Length: 336
Ligand code: SAH
Image (cartoon, rainbow, N blue to C red; front, side, top):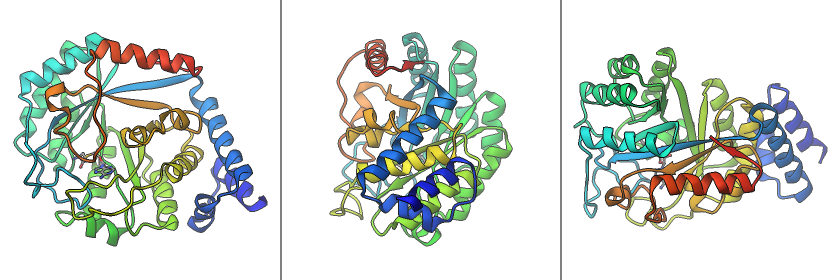
């Protein structure tokens, strides 16, 4: 007990903790010690974020992708997938609907689709910024410094680009089209440009150890991220990793709680992958302070097939938002 508690306390105080000690917490199965971890993380969340849960709408606007990520169902070579791409006007109008429904923030995400030029994305950002009060998070993958700089000038506020795993050999194996160094170049450029930087990683990738996960948590701190999406790996049957085991929701929740201790002020979502595994309710009680809700037009939702199990009910954005706010209220939170 004593060692785990010491690690939790040290992390909470901002002291240096070795990956080995963090890994011990991730391995821990003892109920009392886990209870201590989760309640401490919940307390830290409460101290820094109070009752507020931030709600984000996410629009997945294209499933075209030039990448070959081993785990992703939308990878470039995927033949069985019907591809779609929203037109600029269609995307701007979808953002306006998100605003009218009452959301304050929109996340625009896509595969790495170079059809959208620097100028096109810039124009979309500018139009959304001038016609709504939405904060804009972009999540379009790896682009040159110039693109990121231009989008910032046009009004983009945040950028989400997860490091996925900070184990360099593993990163490079699972992302044969790019490299860990390039990913980090993107993150560093974005932070330099004044974006609020969002990172994060997957839990339970085949071959990943608890010590690697511990490094992932510490890496978030080194990168000074403003937000971090931590979600379980979910096996997609049509990828190179077909047949592998899903990441566990429990281990994801432990990693999330540790991330809260390491990053008291950061925005930590209950990721959509974790919600698929039924983890939202728990996540909010052990460190998460953000919920992402899909706002992708219904005709495209099932085509954004990064992992299975993401079907959602066909209700209006306003109803969806109000349902979530009521649900949060019932849990003692205020959704904004
Ligand atoms: N093209 C953008 C967006 C990627 S998709 C980019 O490169 O940043 C959004 C996130 O989905 C990824 O960052 C990854 O963490 C997650 N993801 C993809 N496939 C997954 C899978 N099989 N299981 C769990 N998460 C997955």
